[in-house]
Image (cartoon, rainbow, N blue to C red; front, side, top):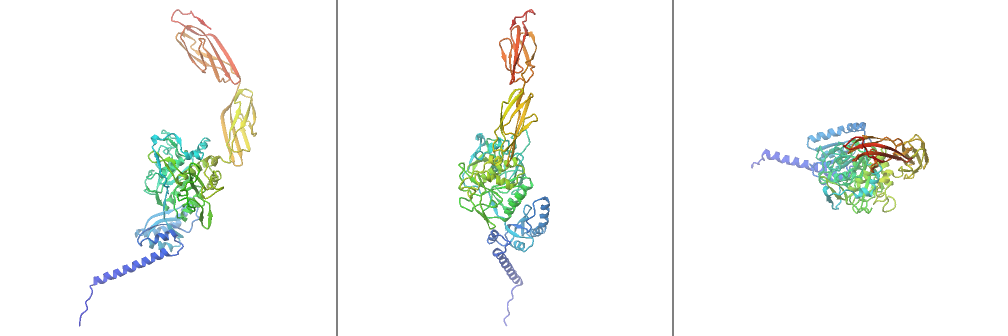
Length: 630
């Protein structure tokens, strides 16, 4: 009988292990493919697409949304969110220890946690009751247009104002004393060169310590000091806040402070989660405005919720529309969110740029017009790392014009809410394109002056005469703009008037400060002119001198002692010389007795005094012999 040969035990074990591994991979693959193809409404469409091309062991970046999304972003709300996220984070940390999870990032501006997870962990997440949805932590980018840039060295920059700043009328706002002082703008971008002369301090005075960039966080490389390895963030910052110290006035609101969150790397790209964390950090650090010139063509519910919560916290999100035009329905996220102040780009002729993304936007069964406004975005000159300037194009360049204008509005109206600021920007824009708000220009190209003062009067006045003898009757003329309906005058002596163009009699001598407050239904504005009205009596001339005698050459200091507030003086020194100084010094080179005459004048009249033989000049010979000079 033939004996059967037996396989070695190690071969049998090896084959068994192969079978087990094969089965495991098949099960994992089946589970993974099923997850990718599943109609599970917890997984976003973009994440499903990503899973279809992802291996079973690869970690996919995701944003995990928890059910409670109505918690306000306050200190108490943040504590509540942290409590809600505790179990989920514990689960993720456990999986991290098994090398199934990395980069866990809790968020508080929305109730969410970002992490990179394997498909198996993702499958487990969809089965948890404390997970409502999971979306792809997508890559966002600055989306700069393909228009070429022209660099200008600081040493060759001419003293000038960037065309976009002039176009929107910002200098006229500065003339009213409004520069964005006290307003902090957050730039969520590629970083900033905080050593650029236009961005290093508020007053360009090296003897003072008042930095312009007062906050910094780096979600890309975790560096502790500001830098910009791309240039985009510095360009944006210059358009918002540049002071012009190095030659070109690029900033719409040069008095603002900046805080900067680096969320995009040297190539201009970054994770959605880091962008959201940048927004959260901006709100936490007291920004009034967030300027965001990045986006994605894929809508994110997480970013939409972030925008809404930022607005609820009292912060204005100013967002680039994107550079995917001229096709319609190309607005990038988060510019597609209704509550974003979405910005398109125009050129120097007020024509919409070909690259500027267009609306409409359809989200959540609602269709609406976007962008909201437009601003200069073609060949815009602004700051670059290293102290220079460059002309760049894109809705990225238009957005900071709007951010700076919002800062000007807030300085003039510090308590204005985000929705009201957005409405003010829209209502005062120059209507371009189709009549009314449209999907190319939005409500039109912004006008900074009208946005700050539009509808509200700007007080101004003149008076005639502004000086004279007591009693003095002055006619005041209101020259305010903005159609005021009420006036309040304060004449500086305790008396007031509500007449538009009053006449007022001053009965006492003095210098009077006049104030006018002009008001209409939109608000009020006040102007004050210090020591504007001068009421005088006729002066009485008087003077002294020292010395009054001495040897030639004799230098004499004359001192006016006149009363009645004279405004002009005429001295005659007796030797043919005269002076119109108040307290002149005169040199006598010849012996003689000199007659001094002083005439003083003001609006009420003049007075003259003469002193004969007042100055006596001798020679070095015998004393007591003088040649009289009259």
